[in-house]
Image (cartoon, rainbow, N blue to C red; front, side):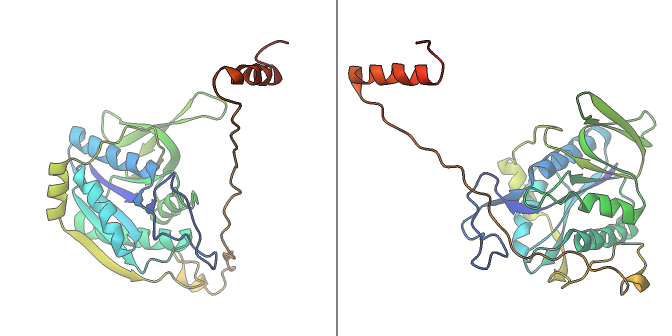
Length: 278
């Protein structure tokens, strides 16, 4: 089994998000970075599958040079090799991202053999586009299912079976011929933490780096198999005007008193919120 996991370097979830003065990007100077939570499960699942079925694993990301840290984290838990599509740090739109990933997959398969399974996170933790995996699968002509929370293989190992939660409860089960693409969700498994020996081994592994540079300015980005001749007639896509943070929820605390003198105020408050009857 030959598996590729595509991941993205994102700010640590739960951190306080601050925008740059021009409101065009997130100010990352004081943020830590990680792999999107869905993709952490994708990395873990790839390692588990190969531990059970045999084969090889690779991890790929499109991002700045600093994204090598996330690739080495993936290798520290058992991924065999890593590919960094190195950019200048600017955010790429999902169409351009999918285009270069599809082209890279084709080049990797020509050199190293076909990937039986390509795993994406259901969506990135920062942008939540829900597009890249679907676009890559379409460009490669492979079946894809998103929202996956369980994976297993047929007895022949020629099909993969995947389950996701159905709207309103219950489960949907899909049977996909290999090679296939899956978008996985958090909850698929419990990712392990990289061990110290794993990190030491990961430091010795080579990361294959491919220079990408800046995001294509104003380009829609062509995925593998698209007709480049039709690019000039394509309808321009949406452009970003600015980012906006959601309004913060403000909370307040009131001191009702101290010692026995606070008891009447506590009783009044409990009666007010309906916990005690008057």
